[in-house]
Image (cartoon, rainbow, N blue to C red; front, side, top):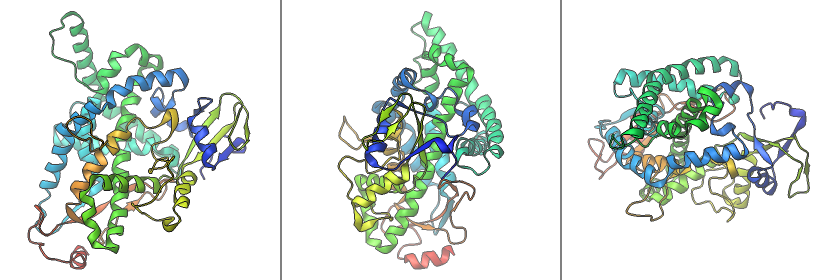
Amino acid sequence: MMAYPNQSAVLDISGVDDAMYVLRSRSLFATPQMQSTTQLDHGSVVQLHDAEHLERRRILAALFRRSALAGYERAILIPALDRTFATLEVDGLARVDLLRLLRTVYTEVVARLVGLDGLDDPEDRAQFERNFAKLERGARSKYVEDPDAVVPEALEARAAILEKHFERAWTARRTLIEARATEPQVDPLPQDLITLMLQHRSHYERWGEDGARNEACLVMVASVGSTANAVCHAVYDLVEWMAEDPSRHGKLADPGFVVRSFSESIRLHQTNVMLRVATSTCVLPSGTSVPEGRLVAVSRQAINRFIEAFDTDSTDRFDPYRVVPTDMHDYGLAFGEGPHACLGKSLVLGDLRERGSEPLEGLATATLQRLFQFDVLLDVDGPPEQFADMARETWSTFPVVLRARAGSSNDTSTRGRSSTAAGAEAG
């Protein structure tokens, strides 16, 4: 377990009832696990508490409305995924680094969601992705063995991203907002984070210039980096699961099954802790008293493993058919719980319930369904690798081999080949 700011004063929580109380209570607020990350998240929603946190969430909720997400999905995500997989030219076997490919696709969505400029040029886009990888690693520095080695590089990358892609957009939208104040007939305002923050500028200015900029970086890291990493985990789990019975591949045509599979995978790979500080003395359901100022740690892994214990037939392994307790999410605590639950859950998971004319697929579901139109094999020449110095399951590279499936629209010269033969070729 990672070190806490004052480990001797930490109360570790592993019981489900106590954990849910801690995460849902407004008497315990979230606290950073390491001081080194404050330069990257100061003034962002993850660092706010009580009334300020509630106010910020209400502001950001407009960004994640179903209608807004459906628009981004229909106009950007689906075309980007279809275009990307159509250009892989799987006339035999195509090798790709899935992690990089997903970052590229998701960046298109998040650029519109945030309102970033200057990503149309391929060279600028490539430089952005290099800087983003450094920013993401810095944002996750609390899991890195030597965080002081990655934060300075992340701050430099952050500055480059903001200068190239944020500041120009910020100025343009501010000018547009000011023009509309006197000339209502001016072009309509974009629906993105930068516009939203400018419309609530007095709120964000409480945290100085960094508040709005750190919020933008947080949305980028959470939407692009976290989602790409989680989808790669789901691919790894599904490839192994289907290897046991190739007929299982047909299940992936069902969006509901894909959501369950992704939820199961993301629960399995969440192993960090969530810290809370008691703002007043409280008593947990177990009877444990938590004095004011006490640091409390909720283990995601312990709570997520409780779900496995409920369904004893498949403990500690990926099982998309897992039976979960009725009062628990099938994704466990992957998206958090309570006031600090992730605002972008629908962006990732979608919402397949009938509301209006079409369902919301979500980044993960849309990606996995289109990816598994192919046979997906792990590249034995260069298998996926994770960062060895991180106390979190984070991929550094995720090479895969794609093969057109027999009878599919992607089927070409590989028609009729067995998985074994394709694996041999991949090797």
